[in-house]
Image (tube, rainbow, N blue to C red; front, side, top):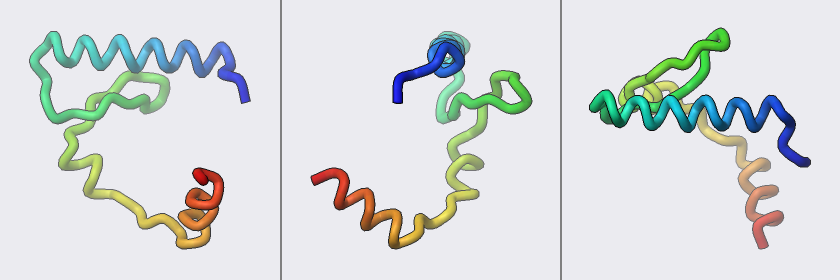
Length: 66
């Protein structure tokens, strides 16, 4: 569907935070939101908690991307 006002504001906040991180010489971090606050999560921590995707969802993705 179309982006809502919330989606647009969230994208703006995250984009601005990413630029701030670069200007502050923060490297190897992911910008996120936690309790409506901007947070910077080191990539090493962000990828540590990865969850495998269900095979059926991968199949749906492949079907829809054709």
